Length: 212
Image 1 (cartoon, rainbow, N blue to C red):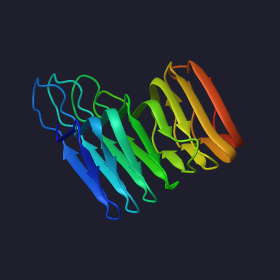
Image 2 (cartoon, rainbow, N blue to C red; image 1 turned 45 degrees about the vertical axis):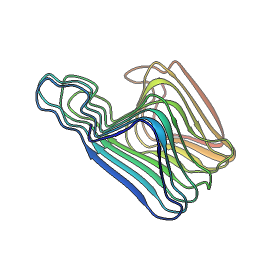
Image 3 (cartoon, rainbow, N blue to C red; image 1 turned 30 degrees about the horizontal axis):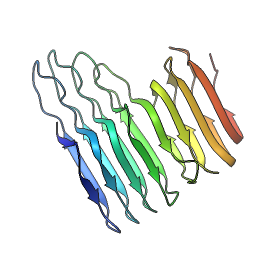
């Protein structure tokens, strides 16, 4: 891994937290993730939290995610949270961003943004778990195609949940924007792989393309 976070706390009350990791590997070695988070916490205050990961790999390697989150917590007060991942090169799981577990939220309702670029064999953004919180009014944006890795819940209280591109995956999605909130889908939903279930709560809802 470029950066491996398994325990402990990275915290700042007002400064910006920026972590940039680049996975290694060249051949048959696996798990060359740019940033791997399997525990611990990253806690920002009024400053932004930026995670930027680029997967490595090559040859017959697998699991070269730009940014992988298996557990742990990423949070902030009033500072924006941005996750940016670029998948590497291998035979599988070269995802830009893969969220298997953990929690991501902002207690001060700051924006949360995901930008993912798929590698040779993988998804741009692959999700599961809970993102945001029902008590916080964050605008949560997924800028690239989303694949549901497992059951995914996205929550905000009166903010906007935006999926700017397509969405696929046989798992279930719950998008709850709360009273006064907005949910938007910018691309086809379930065109490649129909969703297991889609539950939406919002005062404003926009589909820019077909739902399959």
